Length: 178
Image (cartoon, rainbow, N blue to C red; front, side, top):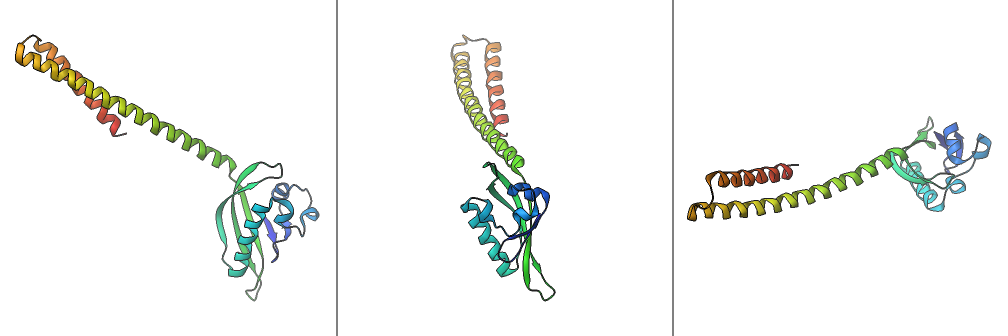
């Protein structure tokens, strides 16, 4: 949690935000801006957002932002920035609340990778089952022709091939519904 003036300079920070800035005391953050603590590309975006808040009076609520911590590691925050008004409804600053959601984002990425892998594996399994249906169908049809025309195949053998075919179709349909 932090408070900024109308020039996007820090006025006060909670301990967690001080650590995020890489300092331990309020005096070390007082009057500094994001340009003093962050890479330019992030600081420019934050300043743009804050100028818009200060101009319009409209807050940003729960915006997911990628940033860099003081150790240079990427991290994700969900951030809310809310204008502060005086008694005359004039904007005098803003309060910001950030929550580190890096672990959540990593978990989401891992889930997405797993989801894509499952979909890919399912497509392979479905194609394999479809191919199996085609093979078993041809085998059943050939056995039925032999049974019907020559009688060289027993009724039990025909029944076995028909069951294999129905089982292959049922397995394909089961996979298709997943």
